[in-house]
Length: 396
Image (cartoon, rainbow, N blue to C red; front, side, top):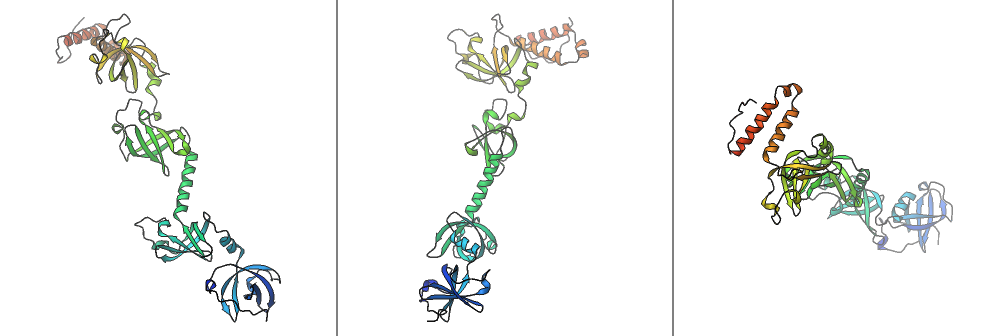
């Protein structure tokens, strides 16, 4: 039998358009043709021009079959890069592909010379998005199923897009630094804090204690869903799954300058914020709370504190101890001598504070006698339960 001729068995699995790879051995060359032994009684022919270098007998190459001509299989040479694409086609690998046409339930894809299928659910398109614009586009897809025997490949664009989003997410998390300022949108408000979305898919929590220097009972009093706010990064934990943000850290704490406004034994007015078993907390200015211990209230033994104080009530207190660095403030309803502080004393303290706020010239125009008369007038008016219609001129 002529070595250039051979009858290949009729095999329906290897028809004229098969992409199955066949290993063949160069037998001989004649003119522009190269003859290849593919197996027992299987020979093929391929044009010499498909080889980069003249092939030699005995050399082995990989081919694909494209039908028979006079008993010889018409061959095409598998280029090295194409061979690698098919041989290395594994689940989870990323490949370049082109969308050829729409197919029932998805898209027909070509990866090099190989045909593949991409289900619509893996196209990365939204449910209401039209599929036609994707046809003809070159995409990076992930192989999710390979069936060599059936020559079936299923790919996914959605997984690649998800991987890119995750990668961008991780890059952003890696770039976060404690103390960094970020702008974000309030995505959710809870009783314990505010969730803020920022960057590309990042979300952090501003705990209620980090919203404001003052005590916050309801976060909705300060922010609303959809509002854009600036925050500072406090911590990044669990690989970015827990990002703590702060808002009060963007402004100076009132404690940092408290010693310029307050001093020990000063009489000030405060507001009871809440009661506890051992006393009450009193806010003397926004963001500055102190503890009024029950032992500093002058209560008779057995008398509960709630009979004397209620949340929201305004009281006159004395600063018993002050530690701005530790943000600790101890208050008392009593003088050092044990006497109860009266409401008149806070009025006098307020008038004195007003005097300190005035310029030196204004202080000279306001004699001490007038100040004393004003304090006495206010005191008598309150004792008689009468509201003053206007300032009364009293001379000392």
